Amino acid sequence: METLYGLSIRQPWLDMIVRGVKTMEIRGWTTKHRGIIALHAPWRIAFETAYFYGYESPWMLPRGKIVAVAEIADILELNSDSSQAFLEQHRLPLPVGDGAYGFLLSSVRLLEQPVACRGRLGLFQLPEKVAMHVLRFAHL
Image (cartoon, rainbow, N blue to C red; front, side, top):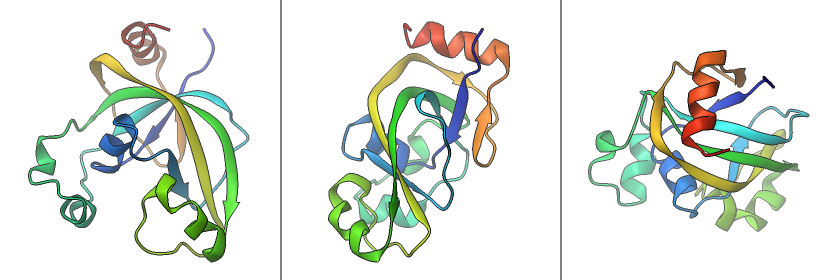
């Protein structure tokens, strides 16, 4: 089986990606990986983001699970000027500094059933059993 990688994204950012409101994830690192990844919701919540965007009960969003898959279509190196040009894609209300990377996400598909999994920092390899469940529930 081909390796499936995961990316942890705090709620409500992940919910915004799943709903198609956010199509770019900002990171301070880059990767050569392109293609399908699993989108993991860690337990930790970005409360300031949740309240800024009107989420009244962010703790009700799925956490501690892989909830969707997406494709990394491309990665753009950003600076304070270019980050403003992509505001509608990444939704960060403050400009990002130099050394930021925008992961362009496409083909986001919600899993039929979330899969429990521990996340990690960076792009992380999923255990084979977890990857099999993710692929099955994503109908890939």
